[in-house]
Length: 235
Image 1 (cartoon, rainbow, N blue to C red):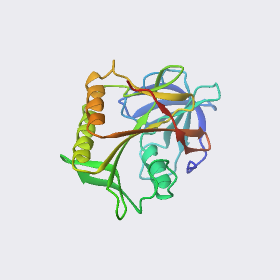
Image 2: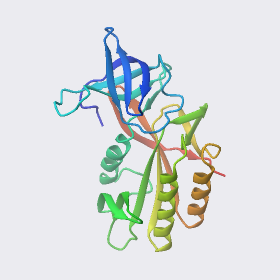
Image 3: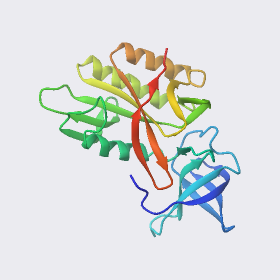
Image 4: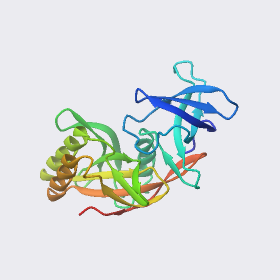
C-alpha cells in the first residue's frame, strides 16, 4: 500500500491527549498531526524523534497532517497508524497472499460476533470451517529484534481472546493475528509483565484451539506492505 500523498519528515515535539502530536517540519513550521494510535506508544514518542507525516487537503478533517511513521534513523521504521494493518491485511487476504490463510473465497470485515464484538475478518469457503481472524498491531520492542504485545494493559484484548476461544469451541477456526509494524524485529512474544491477564487469556485461548500467526511489514516513507512470518516465541 502506497501512502495517498507523499510523506514529509518532521521532529516530534510532544504527543498528548493520545490522538494529537505537535511536530516541527524541516522548514521550521510547527504543526499538529493526528495520531491514529490509542496505545502507550512506549519508546516511540520521545521528543526529538524523527517522524514522517502525511499531509492532506481534506476540508472535512480538522488536522492537515497524520502521523504515519517513526524513523529510527538506523534504516528501520515503525508504523504508528493502528488502522493501517487491517486495510493492508484485507488486500492480502483477498489476494490469497497470507500464508496459512489462503483458499477462502470470501473475506468479510467487521462481522458481529460474541458479546457485542466485531471480528476483524471472517473468512468463508464451501466445505471449510469459517475462520475468525482478530488482528493486533504490534509496535513495542524493548530488546533488540524482539517485538512484544501489548504495550499497555488491554482488557478489550483479553475479551477478544475469550471470544475467539468460544468460536473454536463451536468448531470454527479461530486465529489471533499479530502484525509487527516494525522493520527491526524478527521475533515476537507477549509482554506478560505489562499485562499478565492478557498473557493468561492467550494461554487459555491457545489451549482452546486458537491459533497464533505473526507477520511483519516492509515499511518505507513511500508505503507499507505485508512481509512474511515472524517467529513466535511464547512459552
